[in-house]
Image (cartoon, rainbow, N blue to C red):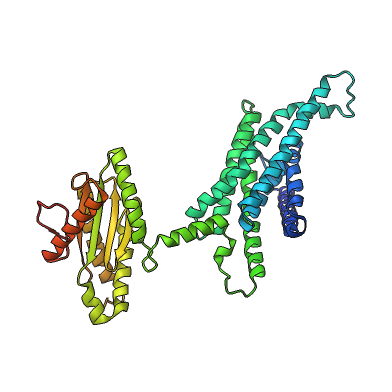
Length: 430
C-alpha cells in the first residue's frame, strides 16, 4: 500500500470521526431542540451519498475502490438510528425513521419530476453533465431510497435479535446488526444499479469492504459513547449497572425472563413449566410428534440438609442444575419443580431417548462430584427419575404428570438411584 493510499485511508477515517462527532453533538442537543437536527441532517445523507457514489471513488488498493458517500454517509444513518433506539426508546426511534424516510421520499420525488424538464426545448442547462447525471442515477435514487426504508427498520430488528445471541457484548451485537444490514443493502443496490456490467463484482466487493470497515469504526464509537455518557449521567447513583444501556424492550424481556426462572438455579420455574407443558403437548398432538416428561427427585436430600445444613443442600441443588444444563438438548425445557424435585419437558423424542438422557445425566453427575476440588458434604449425588411418554402413556398433561410421578415413586420404593420409563419393565439403575 502506497503512502498516498494510507493518507486517503486516514482521511476516510477522519471523515467518519467528524460525521460521527456531529451526529453525537446533535443528539446531545435533543433535550433543547428535539430530534430535528438529526432528522434534517440524516435526511440529506441519502441523496448526497448517491451523488458522491456516482462521481467520487478512492482506489485504496489496486482494484478496490471506496466511495466516501456510500461507505461513510450511509453507515452514519444506521449509526444514528441505533443511537436513538438504544438511548431513547422505540417511539423516538420511530420518529427519526419516519423523518428520514419522508425526507428521502420527497427528494426522490422531486428528482424524478425535475428530470421531466430535460425533454423540453425551453430547458437551459448550465452544465451538460447535470442532465447526464440525473438520468443515469435515477434508478440509483429510487433503489437507494427504497432500501433505506427497509434498512432503518431492519437495523433495529437485527439489534434485538443479536441481543439474544451476544448478551454480554454490546460491541458484538451492534457490529453484527450493522454488518448484516450493509451487506444486504450493498448487494441489492449494486445488483440493481450495475448488474450485467463487466466490473459488477469489483463494484460489489469494493462496496462491501468499504461499508464493513466504516461499520467497525461507527460501532466502536457508538459503544464508547454509550458507556462514557452512561457513567456520566448516572454519577454515583446506586442504580448504575450494565442494563442502563439496554432498550426498554430489552429490559422488559429481561424482567419477563426473571419471572420465569428459579432464582437459585436459573432453571425455569414451576409456573413456566405449568404454562408450557400444555403448550408443548398441543404442538406434539398437532404435528404427530412424541413428547416425554421426566420427573426427578434427588436421593436422600433431606438427610443432607439435616446432617450438613442448608448450605450443603444448596450446593447439591446447584450442582444438579448445572448438570441438567450440560446434558439436555437446547430444545428441552429443564425446570425446578420445587425443593429437590426437577422436571424436564423433552419434545420430539421417543421414550428411550429420554431414558438415555436421564442415564447420561446420572453419569455426568457422578463425574462432576469426582471433579470437585472440595468434596460435597454428603459425598456423591444420585437421583431417581420417572418418565412418561405421549402418546404411549398418556394423552393429557394431567395424565402425563400422574404417570411420571407414579414411576418416580416406584423407583424410589425400589431402592432409588434409577430410571423408570415403563410400567412393564423393571426399574433401570441409573
